[in-house]
Image 1 (cartoon, one colour):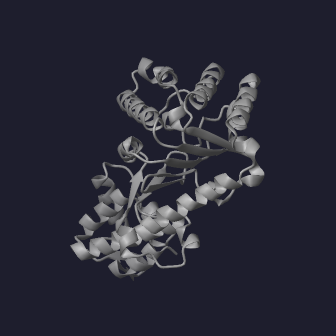
Image 2 (cartoon, helix red, strand yellow):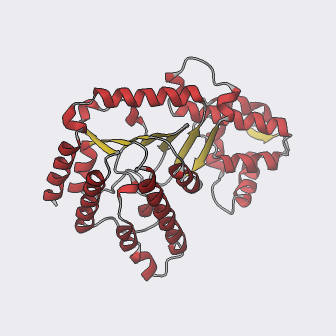
Length: 328
């Protein structure tokens, strides 16, 4: 059972095999009310029941609507939000890395975003100064030529898809992130680690360039073979043109606990963790607590130091990428 589910027990009782909440609503009534407040989506009785049993977690917008519906006081709301944050930190494995209990300071310095909410914060971090270290199960979005993104989205624009406006805005954000990356890499060290097998799957199959390709989730086409070739050629150009940009392609035998999650990275004083609980639903944690950030940075630097030369040497990596282009 999650810590939240245990803590939340004081806000409901069981009467004749029914759950009745502190405002008098039954489980079905509360689920319907939250569903309406969330824009007729994002909640039903089954999902609410699983949360109460500790089988899943609320999203933060869901918890906000719950607190409003139950008319909870500010202190009660804060307790619930901090408890949910703790569960998310536990889910990301931080309880296995650090023996101390999560302090209020850590919880206050952790912000959790959904996939849609995280675009602007990620872009702002990309624009900030400082070295960047990233572990990712795929290629960074900064390696993708914007022209490829625009080509992939044409199918949505041609059929007048309602998502086309959102897609256009997303591509603009990617352009802003890439511009920031190209500006920052001139003065800061950028290192990325990716499993070699992921690149091989990307080349040989119809898989996306990353495990969570957000354009795919918006209905855009996957990359064609030609686009994959152009993508990998652009990546080689980035490596050749920027001395501060380094990419390591590691063997499966060297995959560490880092790949229990799809992505984690450090930029300056911020740690970003990402986990995907389904094909379209992810959570991003941004942490500014200095002990946590320092520990992850040290782990990355040690990982990089321990990697065999052939996995991180720029000429070797470029040679591996050229081999993959030949497979296309």
